[in-house]
Amino acid sequence: MVKHMILWKIDEKFSLEEKSEIMANAKRALEALKGKVPGLLEIKLQTTKLPSSNADMMLDSTLESEDALKGYQVHPDHVAAANDFVRPYTTTRLCLDFEI
Image (cartoon, rainbow, N blue to C red; front, side, top):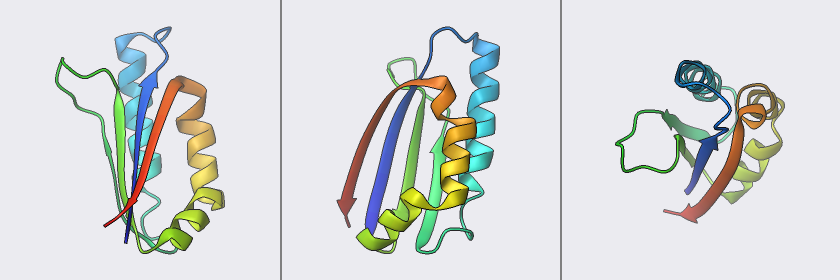
């Protein structure tokens, strides 16, 4: 199995209210990928954080294999969710993929 972890920072130009809406929309769109993307076993977007955090959102997903991860990355539903609900609003993205 493979873990796919992403940290994002939302652009500072957005107000706290806008950031809350952005995170809610991203959470809804990304978590809806479970059952649609082959090999995607679990997906959760963490949007609540402690004040000590320097990221706004964390994606925690588990896939069957590295091949499933490659398929997830180009799956049309994933690409649409990322393009519509994440990429336009974020300035920083860090990724860590590893086998479990």
